[in-house]
Image 1 (cartoon, one colour):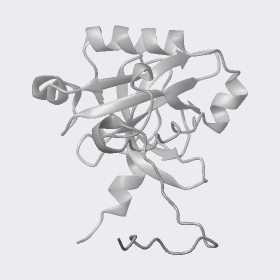
Image 2: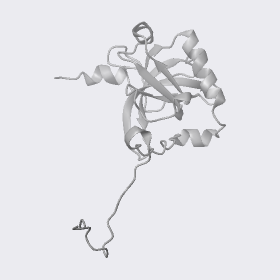
Image 3: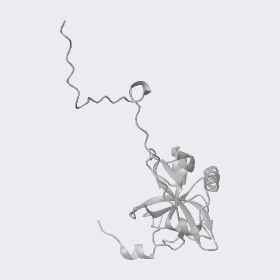
Image 4: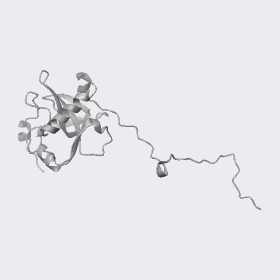
Length: 183
């Protein structure tokens, strides 16, 4: 496998906030709360041309991801995925987001498109994405620049048989062992 580094170095990596719109899908190294990062397809949920910044929502192909689905937009249908430039169903978690400058080095060039922008959501999904972001509690731009990483839901204990609470029976250490009475 060989790489043409000269060609890769000349490809545009930036996302221009003047040409970016809500609903654009971009490749970005999205940070985790622990400090690590992974390249993901993210959805642009807000654009700020005054500061040349965009707000990106976390994208995942793991549809069983333990997070609040009321703060998410999921692209399920195959036709919608193809139109958006996605190769599989994807959920964009708007409560997990980051604000980046248009020339941030975390934007990644898509290997076939030659730019960080890889696709666009349809108008109905874009409107839904705007609505989800509008409903989010307000957060200052500085906090969004650091990244918003909500904690996951508290795992619920699995119920016992037929949904009944589990009963734990423990033998007392000082009690003598039970012996059936001899009659």
